Image (tube, rainbow, N blue to C red; front, side, top):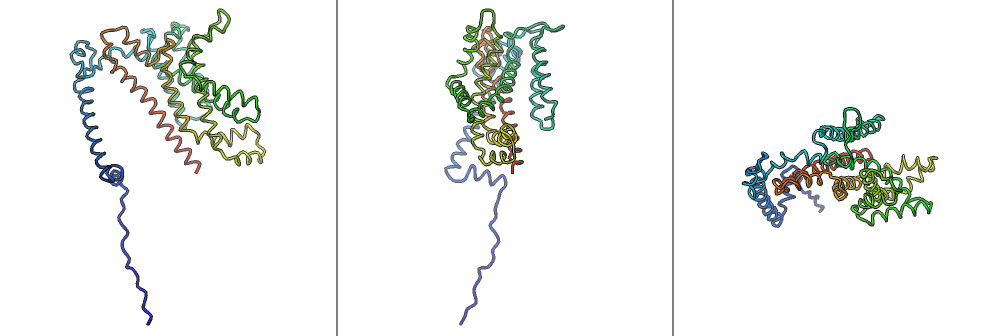
Amino acid sequence: MNRAPSFIPARSPPRTSTGLARRLHDSLAAGPASLLATVVLLLLGAWALTHLAQWAVLDAVFVPDADACDAARGQGACWGVIAEKYRVILFGHYPYAEQWRAALASVLMLALVVASGVRRLWRRWLPVAWIIGLLAFLVLMGGGVPGLPAVATTQWGGLPLTLLLTTVSLALAFPLALLVALGRRSSLPVVRTVCTVYVELVRGVPLISVLFMASFMFPLLLPAGRNPDVLLRVTAGITLFAAAYMAEVVRGGLQAVPAGQQEAASSLGLGYWRTQRLVVLPQALTTVLPGLMNNFIALLKDTSLVTVVSLYELTGALGLALSGDPTWRPYKVEGYLFITLIYFALCFSMSQYARRLEARLHRHAE
């Protein structure tokens, strides 16, 4: 006798949760060990935040009162040092009466950088705006025109100097890095050898030695009486140093592009430069965008090394502000926290822009 097949009765699907509560549970309390670690870290974080708030806010002194800061030493922060010395920290020993020019130049430079990050403003006039903006920056900082007294570059400092070194070095280093990366993959032995020697030679020494060479040793190789401005020499040294590192990042992106892409471009009759510009480089740069942004951020922070050649950017300007004033010298921690906040704002903004740009490029590539 044939028996009818039995079927398992249908059941409702298991409940799944993808909300915030589920993600927090999976990340912080997936098991006993994870839960214990979460509790310990939360307790340590609460203890640290409580003491930080006590030191930075509740017991802090916010007015430039040296006696009040001395009374609160060891218990609260003295933010009065920022209120007292912020102009020297931001502008170095730029002439006090002319610091409005340095402030205006910094705003102009930041406006150009922000405008360059807005895709709607990527028009043909943007490079022209950069040229005009840089010229205006140099005129404001250097003066020498009717109504603006001349200020030597040795007196430039603080935030304007940091912005100038970073933007100009990046603008010059990036195209040089592209050429060096392409040269390292060239079929011409001479070109490949020259590019390889340049990259390995520059990457084999620290940036501080490059700055010393540019500032002190390079003038010895020139004829007597011919000595380029120290700011120009330092900018050239930073540019060459940054280009060597960027070139290796770009070369990694070039190697990641399948060979079939170049073969397809050749079959369409595209020449070498058009192939690189239209086919290879867009894919390579999209691939290595995080690495390039790391180089950009590192370059911004490396500008602090120019202090060793007597150019006082943000970090050097802080030392300049406090070294000659024994009243406020004990509160250098607060000063370093202030410039740390500035560096963090700049670096974090660059990082977030790179993340959005990377997401947009990968979305268009899919």
